[in-house]
Image (cartoon, rainbow, N blue to C red; front, side, top):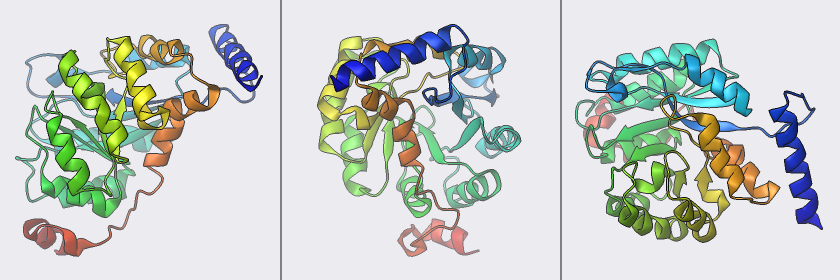
Length: 289
């Protein structure tokens, strides 16, 4: 009976949203994966421009009320993060910010970059992409000091997640796309057991084409390990959101994916870092300057 009531409630919420009818307590939806700003690579959309003008219209139509923003690929992430920070600071009720860092180019200054992003712009996480460089111990230590979740695109190298999860059990890692935006079935299948094995490993729904694997991730890892994300502005957030609704989950599990898990992951973010003595020597020197 409880499940029937939940399904009826969810159906009514979606019906109201589709017809533009405001309700007192609509489902809160947070898109935990969207790029914003200009890149400087000019190799493709991913490092040229991420305009969110159309995205915002699509998100509004889909009932997405808040979005996590981070830069596209850039050769100077401090500059790119500033652009994101300005947008977040201008619209703090609409946007959250994650600071993008390059493990190689930003080596030795990760602490100062993250401190600036958290304290000036209120950023809630760190974004890392293996396209730039493999994630570093420095980044993980800084994330731990500020209690920030790390969104790390491993580009198929899911075996590294085992090491990250065990070396840094106090850091929450969000591995988007089930580990492969390239739709590598073998990689995604190998990643799913990590959701169950490690309490600090999460994923998001962005760009996942194989619906059966998304179902499997929730069945094995649990709805508490999955975040809704679109990989906007290039992927339509409304289309990506429909995958979540198509799972036909309980209302409680839907709420976890659509906002609860993200809010829980950022709930312990600290503006003042802890345990600076655990940082690497180079990061520690920078932190204490």
